[in-house]
Length: 130
Image: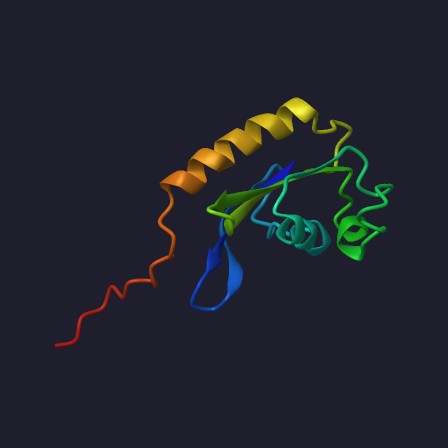
């Protein structure tokens, strides 16, 4: 029901949300589970959970409970053993992500990591002095 792409900002040494979408009406901010993201950053491996609230790896984290996450899929963008970013999807409906979903998103993330520059350029200023 929600999805986000986060890229690692070398300058600030943190992940920065580049795009996010939700099926919820309105412009509600898409929140992600820090617990899931930390696990993916730690392992540098995809994380798939069909029942996030009962998954022992996630230990009933508040972000999972607060956002009512039922199923989640989080995939790192990795190149040369370096994490460039992550893709995070979650569902609060009855549909659980599958192993096939994970394999497809992992393949897409691998291609995206190959295409992405290693260092994210600083935001360009649109103003000119004068």
